[in-house]
Amino acid sequence: MELKPIKTEQEYRAALDEAEKLWDAPEKSAEADSLEVLAMLIQAYEEKHYAIPAAEPIEFLQYVMESRGLTRKDLEPYIGTRGRVAEVLNRARPLSLEMIRRLSEGLNIPADILVRRYETRHAA
Image (cartoon, rainbow, N blue to C red; front, side, top):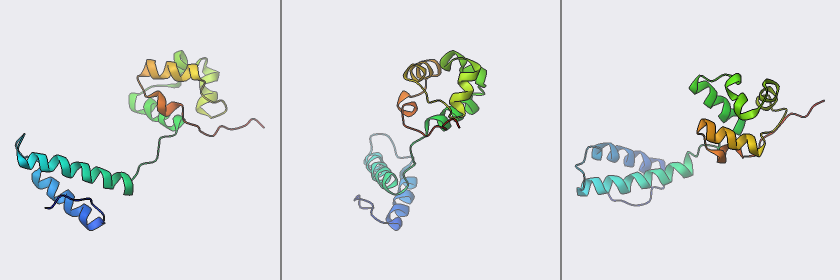
């Protein structure tokens, strides 16, 4: 397969097929080099045509809780009282910079996701 930018869905499918054929190429071989370049071309096409939207901070935090088996009580050291945790998770109060720092450090999660803007509910 000629290595060139992938522009169509058909070229993308062909590139995936070729990558699968090259998958077990011996390290430092010409085939392994071709696979590496092909993977970069595939990644570029996927980023352009199959982009995944950025995570929303509260949804991301809820995902982290679910995947790690954490409860709201487990967030209290990072966010504050039980009521404060509820306010944040229910979007009645935004995450503060200090909360973001503690969550990032304490749970080892990326702060750049937590600092993104998100909608909060306004009290009626």
